[in-house]
Image (cartoon, rainbow, N blue to C red; front, side):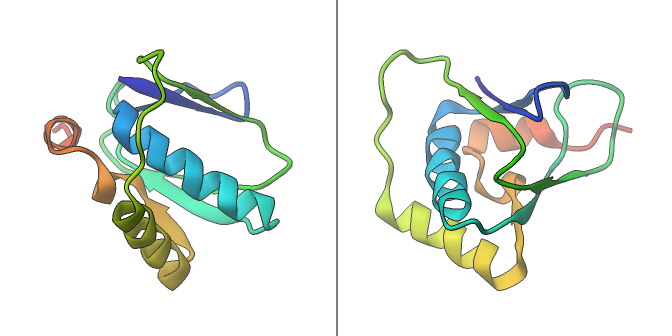
Length: 110
């Protein structure tokens, strides 16, 4: 399970390595173009049962930590699908793109 640390102080976002590799391409592309956007997910750890949204901006530090030491392949169609969704709404909902085994762990807790 990989981690995306945003702003250097918040708890990392837990994301499977395959999704994190694709997310790295999407975020890198948007920030390289100086395009900020919202990113939303259901936290997997802690007591929060709702969704969390952050504003992704080029000035805010990001760190991608992969469990695997090997680079993972990215699938062009998956990148295109994620980018289409993001460009259509201005928001990237990570839960929509998680690997099935991780997505089942993200069900909100009561």
